[in-house]
Length: 507
Image (cartoon, rainbow, N blue to C red; front, side, top):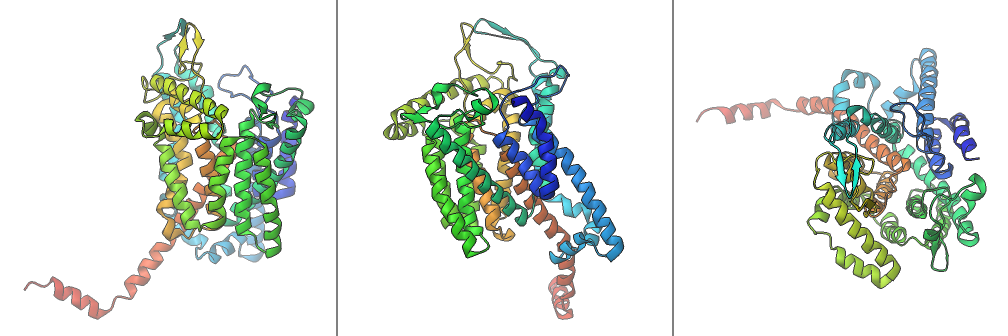
């Protein structure tokens, strides 16, 4: 059944695009694939450079192909309208924003120069990173009685293509989910997906986490890790119950954002009724970290202005971008954090302490190759007597171990830079609640990447939508700037000019 679901998903994606259109089809193809496709099978075809075919690869490729088809179909429809009406819908939308397509054609470089350079550089480095890592790891590694072969340049082929597939949701969202209206659609999708997942999670909490086994025939992880406090932790169709927890947190924050962005009082009341359901389900899911993140971000979504929200997420993004430095220099108070966790739950505190010890081992290992890392195939792990003694959990330490600072700054930079850019332009951009809400959801996910590894397609979808919105706003301003400058120049009076000449005259 798992193979049927994976290979039938392109038909589902086609149906989504046909029924929902380009934007909603794109969102639900990525979101639906992540939520409901099984984590296995992971198909490894004997084709050089081809990544694993799994629940990440299939929705991303389907979205790419169908977005291209739908975009061409829309372009043909707009061409017909231009011929019939002489004014296209695109021109009308642009005029409503004070920018004409003719102006954009006259100033293409200005429209694209601001806000894109940093993101484009990070994208290029993200693709080149595995090649650089392979070139700097040609020597074999002998560790703990094991010999791990070195890499050649062609060994990086699969990693490069895997990176491109991973970034497809970011690139598609950057181009097609880049307006406030489309951000509201994305928030709505998170709310609906969260409610569905909450109901399924409550079933597994009550009946045991066996939905994936009943439908697809396997359990995705260790059973004992999903026994919590005399009950069950839901896993649904994810690799681990922790991923269910962080998605429920993101969905709960989306519900809180929806309470503030609802278009009518009746709609607002309905969304408010969903918030207790999401919080209750999150508590029942028994993920302490996800509960803590929800307790932190939901009040910001409910009670603070977009300006304050953006300042908070910008601050968090800066800390996460520098986290390896802060962690290595012991600025992060790990002992106090463990002590606080112990006051809440002794078992969770022991788990956290074990994670921190493993991070110390892996950081020491990563410091031997800080620029481009050790690469994959276990070379970045720590072994003793032929056995691996390090257990990685956080995405940050996995990335910096495999691909060094180059990989960390490109991967986490693509997530953090949109938030930092919004924070820097917070006053001038006039950020809407929906956009600020997406920034809160992304920040919550980024904080979770410190202890856990849930870097998912929906993470990239949100980051791309924020980057695209920022670039669109800056492009609009850069196109409008020449006209504004000419108006300012035309208001200069002869008296003012005479005053300037008098000021330049020698005394």
